[in-house]
Image (tube, protein in one colour):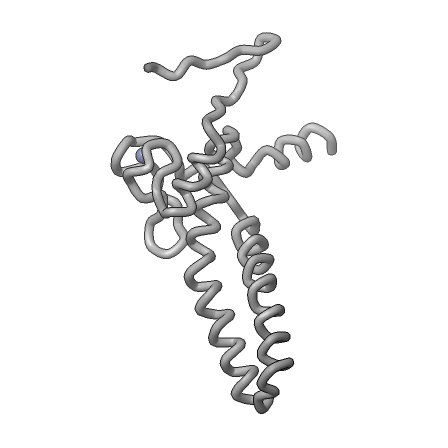
Length: 141
Ligand SMILES: [Zn+2]
């Protein structure tokens, strides 16, 4: 089925896709459209186009969104874990802090690309590219 461009009040309306499947495919490092090709090139760079279906993804700019959500998730894991460890075992500060920093770094290393994939998938599903606010700034001042 060919994609059709919708028009509202004479202006083209961006295509929209199922949000949940695009988000989950991105979370699994897969293309939000086909779920077969990878969305990423290296650790965090977005491929210009999906190698499996050719969907253009390189124009999507997630900026600081993935880092924000990654810190949000990691903090919600690490703070309760640190409180539980301190309450039950009272470890010495240096080994406790070293283990906490190492655990946080490992979590960030594993979660950041997946959360970026989810953000890229969400933006793709909503027809966003990341430069929408720039247009508002240009128009209003
Ligand atoms: Zn694809």
